Image 1 (tube, rainbow, N blue to C red):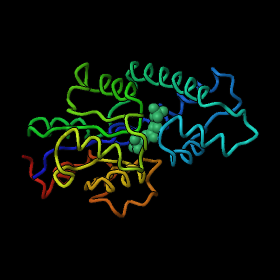
Image 2 (cartoon, rainbow, N blue to C red; image 1 turned 45 degrees about the vertical axis):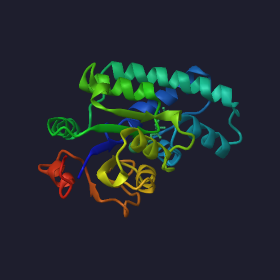
Image 3 (cartoon, rainbow, N blue to C red; image 1 turned 30 degrees about the vertical axis):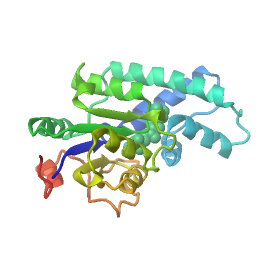
Image 4 (cartoon, rainbow, N blue to C red; image 1 turned 90 degrees about the vertical axis):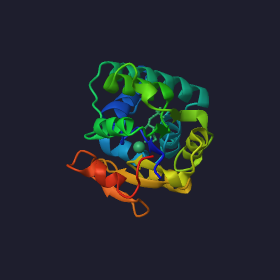
Length: 233
Ligand code: XBP
Ligand code: MG
């Protein structure tokens, strides 16, 4: 039986990376007086590293001529980036991806528990869910596993294992929804069947271990297809 749906956030619930996270990073860099910014392809390259602080560290390692920041500096700049991102979400300009709200509503009507497994900062998840689903958006999810709650971010399985443990369901009874190879690796390593909805950034990644690869959930009939063979209950 299908007992729960576990959603990634960035790229899966909403297309947050290019126009929200990337822009928030650049505004935080500018506010800190840093002499670099991430254009769209550069950001796409560094999405190979999950976690904003880890992404910035990797970029600096690759660019030894740029100012080298301490972990404390990175944490402060990242906090500023989170504040900027949360303000963007509160402005309400970023929608959920097509079909996402319909699937969330269908799951609620079927009594199917929902959970979140993401590497992003908890405040980001909360502000996105509130701005798109309303003030009680976060409460639609039984468990929200996010950010630094586990030591190893995706592609490590830790965040999915944590969420499964909290849910109390075996991996074989749950379905993960992801958009990236890092997310897919994480979910599959935790034992989860995974449906991919690709984004502009992840279109050319390897999804050979996915249960199904879709452009989006908004095509006619796609949520039903996703749930084929896995009855709610
Ligand atoms: C999301 C991430 C995050 C976001 C930024 O990956 O890697 O780092 O890009 O969020 P996934 P923070 O969708 O696989 O969970 O800056 O809060 O880390
Ligand atoms: Mg993602």
